[in-house]
Image (cartoon, rainbow, N blue to C red):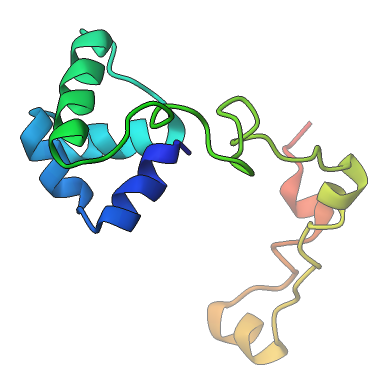
Amino acid sequence: MLVLKQQLKEARIPQAVVARAVAVSEATLAQIVNHNEWPRTSPEEVRQRLALYLESQGIDTAKSFDAAQGAVSPRTAGTTDKTNLSEEENMLLKKQVLFPATKKAFGLFRDPFADEAMQGAD
C-alpha cells in the first residue's frame, strides 16, 4: 500500500475522481494505490499525471509513491504457510452407507460404494 492512499483519505478525495482526472481506470488506480502495481504501458507517464493532479489538490507528492509502514510487500501478499500432507489426508470424507429402505427401493443387493465395487474388473 502506498502513502498515496492515506493522503487521499485525509484529503477526502475518492479514488474514482483521481482515476478520471489521471485518465486511468478505477481498477488501475486501485492496483497502484493498494499493491504498487503500475500499468505496463507508460507507467512513468501515469506517475507524472498523478503527481500533477495531487499537486493541484495541494497534496505533497514527495512521499506519495513510497510504501506505507506496515504494508505487505507485493511478493509476500499472496503467500501462505504450506499445509501438511497429513492435514489434507484427514479431510477425506467418512464412508457413507445406504439405508436398507433405500437399497430396497432401488433394487440394490450390495453397497455400491464398497471398495470392491469401486474397483474395475481385473
